[in-house]
Length: 447
Image 1 (cartoon, rainbow, N blue to C red):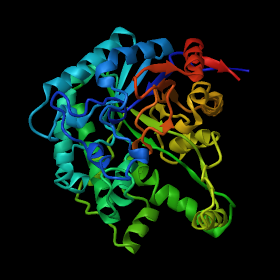
Image 2 (image 1 turned 30 degrees about the horizontal axis):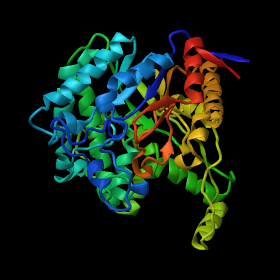
Image 3 (image 1 turned 90 degrees about the horizontal axis):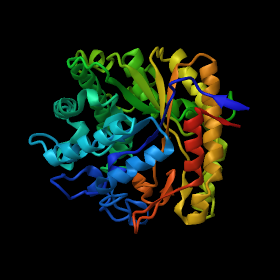
Image 4 (image 1 turned 120 degrees about the horizontal axis):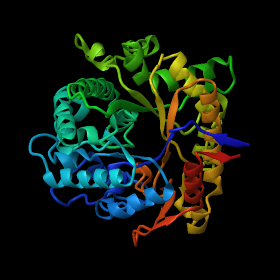
């Protein structure tokens, strides 16, 4: 069967500044929280650091050539806040502006529409020293930054994204294994409230420009939890927590329904975690946006009994590896949930989706990545089904263009369509790159 996608469907790839650019200490760029966090012993798997990464700061022409080889019509990237404003506020770094102007010009010359994220996790370190997202002043800091971006790149960017996966801020402030590496849930909850305010104010600012072509939205990842044994109280409670209290509900409810959900409010009050909310905050957060970006990787089934068994095996020192089963079919359910529960009546784009190979599997296995192709096919089949069922899905971005710095996993997780040799910085097309180029050419694929 051939899965044909709608005419003008967007096919793209995605990256993020901190993961590919390198050039961390060049041309006036300031430190980000990930530069500092990566220097903490044990913070990053095998001690990986993002100073060079894929060196896209110097190899941007080659990277755009790869996009051309893939035949994509849109590229999702992010701006490095500390490359634009080294201290987070104040003096603009013109070298940073020039770098992104060059990138956008190259994209446009090759018929590739820019999809640019304002914030993809790399807060300037100088702002974290002043409290980061836990300080309500971040709203004015972020709005200043957004204005610099809109003043310089404005209508040259087709899709503007305010934030990518806000949950990373929660993880970094409450769970410690993302930058800046803190363990304070109350602080994290306040930070998330401020982040949503930043989003709302950036959207309001964007509207004042009256751009002819540019659109604005947000990207929220959804790892939907399901009870492994429907009707089992423990499993149901685990799924509810994974969705509403520590997952997508933290963001989607205030963004699209207004305020926090009753489940989240109950959790706040029971645990003395209620963030400070000022009058008008939720009106600011709930700004109408032009599109929604969905980062989807898997559906998760929660089984309390199996979880206890996993914990037992870990404590006993076994070689158990916690790799969840693949549930690509969940993408169809998630897309319907966005429309039916959260009442989205705007275009939806799958802004990230992909599958990692472990670096230890070796170069040949990474280059002949049939497992990745099969996984992406499965996700696209279910996405296609959602379109047939009336979901306004306009595009798909594969994560990622090339292997890169995968946050706390360092350089051990390889998601790329191109294999990155981190010693020579050569980019080598994998089997999946050739397959994806055929998909973009035919606007679909054979099952």
